[in-house]
Length: 312
Length: 173
Image (tube, rainbow over all chains, first blue to last red; front, side):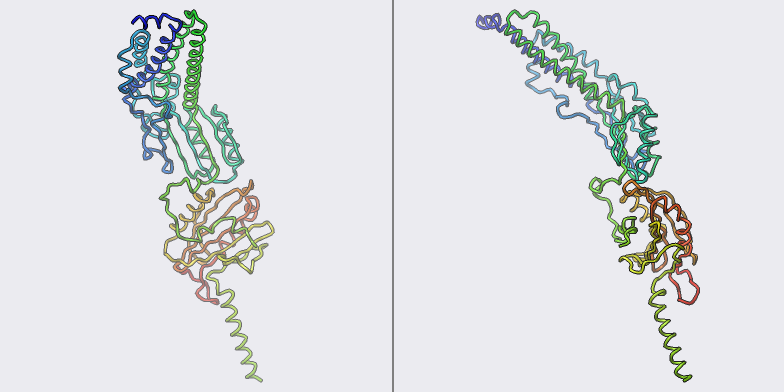
């Protein structure tokens, strides 16, 4: 016991505290994910099925999960639960934050709608939800293949529509254009641009990132509290070595905070501005459904300008 | 002398008959080459008729044995689907037409860029018991628009299989 006391009252007195604070931040993140799971029921809202889409060629690719592996909420496991039970002090305060975090994890309303659906949430309804977690945070994306006719003229027209609808150009090549459009005008923009020519294929995907966003929000809050505590500890540090150690940890936490803030900004941006890409080419054969029927008439394959105009 | 003249006359008549069968009557259709177009003699395999003009507008006919059987609607839909979905042609227009001998047909107009130049490609389909007739015409949008009347005239002159070289054509639906 005396050894123990001696160790903590010595020059490394602050190091265990720094360790505890970091451990608490880690566990806080895990606990917050768990609390979100309780609030959201772990079931992210899913867009309606392809059958409900207004266009028969339109398919819906839904990633209701919407989380990269590193962002998936951790499920509590036994060792973490034990640590959680055994530590007090600073960690107890972090547990208090977990409760606050639970309040932040607002239950996600069921049945968000995909664009074009007649019974579901449209992007218009989503527009005010991008700045908070109160509601589903959905990222709408559309990829459309159009017939290859008067392409330059059509690309110019698409760009004009995007600008008129307060969108902006993201990318333009000889046979494709990508633009971002306020989510509230996603449906309208899609309708306008596809009416310019002959639509061949359409993919609309809705990605629900509510859980990912909420998780980031909670982790950010915890990380900020850890940063504040580290700053306090830094003020109290009387040894240069301790101060350096704390400063290093402070820099790490600050970097994590910046990364999380950046990711949240990115998600908010993706949700508030939908992405529409128009390709002026038929969908590539390799990306078509494998079960597409092959028509067994050679003469059909020989139709077309290439062969007709070749008079040699 | 009289006998010899008669014999020569029979030989000439026979040669003309055979010649007619080999040339005009060998094709299961008839089409009037539009004014300003030149008919090609040596056709690429698969084409039964091709002509072109100095604006590089090309007109062609293919007569395909109608086997397996289908109807005008199914064949024209198949053609449209193939050209649109697989080859990226834009469907500009569809209309009902009729051959000179009264066979109903479907005409589809497509658009496609070659390089950055827009082209028009027109396919007219006639379906009879024995043949599927494909009349194709194509050229730049500008030239096709200028020569459309000639092309449409040729399509209107089209006759499906003739019952006899000398008799008037009958529809063979």
